[in-house]
Length: 360
Ligand code: NAD
Ligand code: ZN
Image (cartoon, rainbow, N blue to C red; front, side, top):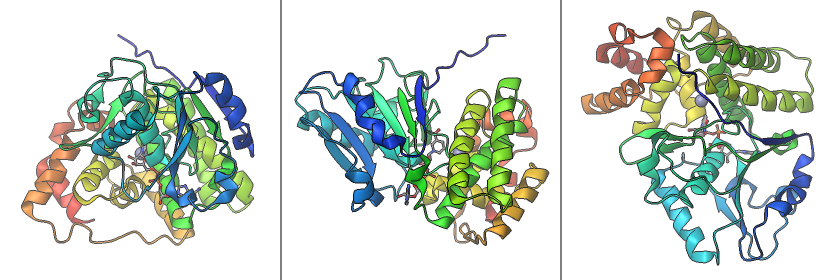
């Protein structure tokens, strides 16, 4: 047996208001006055002085606002890297991502591509990155994806949606300040929160499970049940707990894998641009046969929070469209193997996936 040797986020700060300590954290990491810190910030905060006034810029530091309307693309990473190289006197001191999974993934990918030649699409896959990334910091403003702890940055490229999975991908520093999540809209809170819940179910029922993954997964799952099914939490407690659920859910899949919902949701994302959180929910809602207990509880959570998922998104698709989605989904072999074991191809056929997609 050859056990994997994973890197972890080496530094993390947790606490309401800890965002105020950002400049103390960054200062010792500044290389020199010509090497700026570049902040990639979700543009939902553009006119939000409560947050932006606390980003303290010195020398040539700059803030780039980025829309999280669409999931990150390899071409977007390449364009950002080019812009940063052209406008900075020297290689930056660091990249700071402030936002949800979309912005965190962009920050990770940009920090890698600043020190590696070629285009981001060349590094989609496992362990293709050659040089260490520049210093990068992740500051989540919505909880659930686990992107703040993971060893991947999920990008849509010209031919596939696949992460840059590498030892250089994890952040050097994470700031967990749950106050930053206080204005997340309710439906988005649910979708991204369910990403965490689904990570737990897929990890805990998977064939790759080991005790490392299980302990993190169980903790995250208990937190999710408390947050999404009980009534006794204050907003503040709920925000703090979801932030830690996200962290533990991410740690759980580090040593295992996700499963059926993620594989199929990647297909929806690639073809239709359906975003990760809501896409996972749309798929998971139809996966009773794979995750009976998990889907039952998901439906209770959905009901409790009055969530209506989009329906009929596959209604008008052509045969070619279905084939594209199925190809993307079936290409994610480790996810299927985790979900169903080595002989997954016996149950998962093109016809089977098509019949599932047709329900969505
Ligand atoms: P997101 O970053 O796409 O943001 C969703 C929406 O919430 C956006 O409209 C955004 O502007 C808004 N938002 C974020 N913070 C807010 C705040 N504090 N107040 C108000 N609005 C706010 O959402 P997400 O679900 O966190 O991330 C999804 C992305 O994460 C996908 O691209 C997916 O591929 C990726 N992902 C990555 C990993 C990983 O390990 N790297 C894991 C899971 C998902
Ligand atoms: Zn996910």
